[in-house]
Length: 166
Image (cartoon, rainbow, N blue to C red; front, side, top):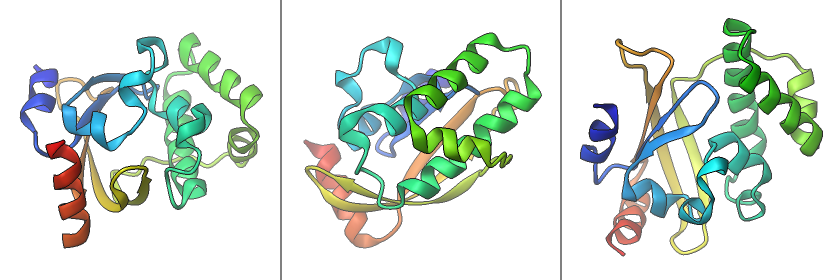
């Protein structure tokens, strides 16, 4: 059902994530907004992995530090709520070994969940796009997160419209 919701949110970019940031469903607009998405094998379709370790994504977020900080605080909250989740613990250990930014930010022990915000993206085709995002938790499955992006201004809306029309 939620995968259909994600699809029906078009033309707004939307994605369904689990607590580990595994990408469970997405619409075509997200695939265009995240330039490497469709080239990534299904086993690597994890939003945190993309932001941390995919080389093409290292310069994608203008404020990468804050995006990582927010994501890691959410991951820590999920880990604290589910200490028995071996897959989550393994993911965290792997990130800490592979990325010094993750290891540094993880050691700061911030915990939190950010339900909305703004990100400025450096898209390789569309240029700078500022998006607002909203994270929705389905009542029937609060372990999932429905992430929806909206253009934050008219210039970003025009860029996003051109990008998604390709």
